[in-house]
Figure 1 (cartoon, rainbow, N blue to C red):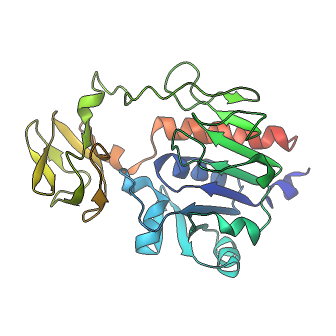
Figure 2 (figure 1 turned 60 degrees about the vertical axis):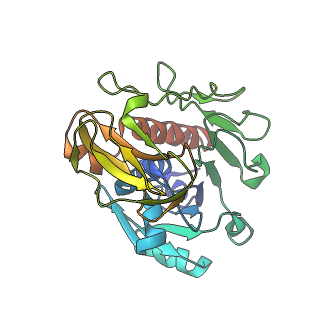
Length: 270
């Protein structure tokens, strides 16, 4: 396959959250730009400032100079591509697969289990993280667990099991993550990028206050008014205190994007 043909690959990414967006941006910068990202009606991304799922609500979303546009039909998807933007579609059942032939399908929902992805969906189907088996339900699995093997492309077997422990930032793991104390609507007057001190109120779920456990800046926060369930991750405090990090793709997302690019180029013999 020539470079010219490579640029014509149709790519479906399931999910449009933080990691999926990092993948989409890496592919886009490598000139693989015919990308569709399928999302749910009510995305719950925490790092909204760097998640293309915001296009579901705002119609457009720009991350590091790359723009995604909400679309509803194959015709609108093609129009988005012609404008050099990434297409986002509300399609939790991935029905768009029946209307557009995709050369690559990437399950980047990071649900820690397979929600229905099958390697018959495209010539190259990639599963991100736990829940997939390379050579069985997908063609390739990408290791998403932080550590020595982050971003490794697996042609057989599975990724490491979910540890349940967030990535370590300056010695902070579990204490930097904000979780819903109960079921209900999440309300807040805080914004991504706001500085906080340990003990500060960040918001509330059904009148139960959610407080920061460490000093830092709010790197991520789900959209106010979202209905959440107990234990759901609803925010992220960055102890480094650098507000610019709130609006840039993380090291992990970039690594996963590079791994997907490796898998695509390897498959198509470039």
